[in-house]
Length: 325
Picture 1 (cartoon, rainbow, N blue to C red):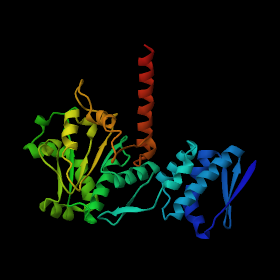
Picture 2: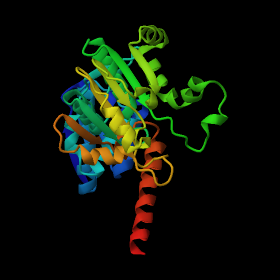
Picture 3: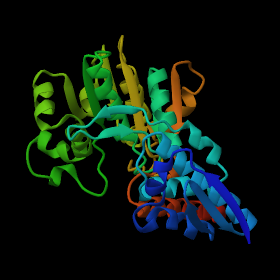
Picture 4: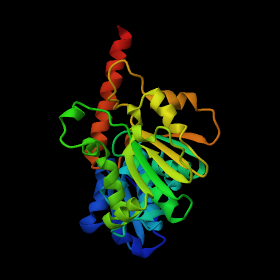
């Protein structure tokens, strides 16, 4: 049995670190097979040497989050544990408690993972950013938050959010209503993000003044978009021609964020994804950057992360079988 002691610099950190009925620290104990106790301002980790060293890294990571004003929860505890297990715990220092903006309900929006922090910084520092990653990594939501922040700071005059209306197993013609009613279901995730951040009344007022626009990608053709924050969502479902058309809408004083998941392409067989093409074509151009988010950046229910990882393993298995034939 090996013991290691971590001294808490702030005595009031003990309660939030351990959690109600020690619920937080029990997750660390279970993950590494150790026993963790406390005495005054000391945390004592006991177990096998390697397990204790790993658990101490996790405890220090959680303390670092508390130092930055974060509240420990199931998601960020699991994230810290996963970073320790993958040997990436040193990257946790890149996490910042900086608030991007405040939602209509008064909740702060912050980066929850190192990948998200990098994504936000890349958007700040580049005119065009490609955010690629699986479902649940916050690609669209964070882009919308950055757009709202830019408009509130008067860095842009309007927000334009678009996505291709690609059919995924359903036919547009079978949906009721006029054209707008038919495409609205494809745009619903974008409305949800805007409503959450701006609130319904603010969104309606800005939309009436044409300062916020949500529209299918086809509506972008022939336009030049100046002083705008433009987001293209579900970009994996664009063709190379559509992607070129969209990117060339860029006007003076504007910023573009393109998001997508290249593992969920709904284009008809034989059609190339414009997103897969464009990251190769533009990779060496200044002021254009690509950020790849992974399953570690999934911030939805833990099962979403497990599902994403399972599909990645299955895809790798199928690819190996195909290559062996």
